[in-house]
Length: 225
View 1 (cartoon, rainbow, N blue to C red):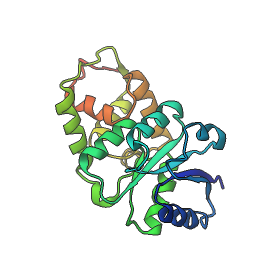
View 2: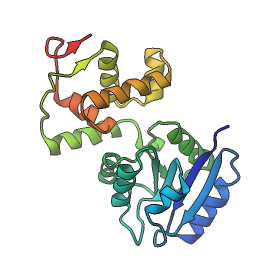
View 3: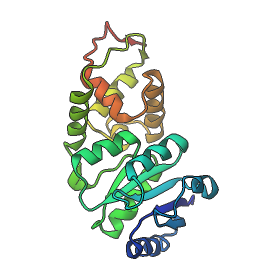
View 4: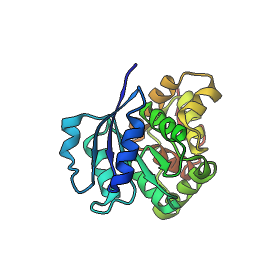
């Protein structure tokens, strides 16, 4: 069993110690370090080599959003999950665009907490149940209004399967849901998403959804192979 190597960044000592103690009981989660945000430095990631970072959305001594951006830029293989009591929509949008892979409510059950960490470590994007549903569409719509129409990338050669996956991403489906709907493995979905991002010169699933919302490309405009 491959263990999750996790770094925790939380400025509240009680929470930090409690979360660390809770996660250390899980056989597949290895808390390699737990930091007060005042003591954390980005270089620690190179030393500790985690594959998951769990941090407080509202750190006292550091800008959590800027930290997420730095982590996503410097360590693209490291997944980031943020914690908050009830994050507002604007915060969720900004953190998703910055590269966050999951959100955990601080009043989540232990089962919900650990499940989120495992799912994100496995490559999925996770929102708490009470924030899911239409939220993805709201985030995309908000980003569309701010960014304005995107130019159609007519030179992109998209396979039929990739086109289907783009449409499902735009509907807010996660990789696991797409795999079930198309009757393919989740690893195949991940491979297609990676190829789509590269072909469209995009960085995140949200950008794929935004592009899809702004470009009603007909089959004559998109090259299907």
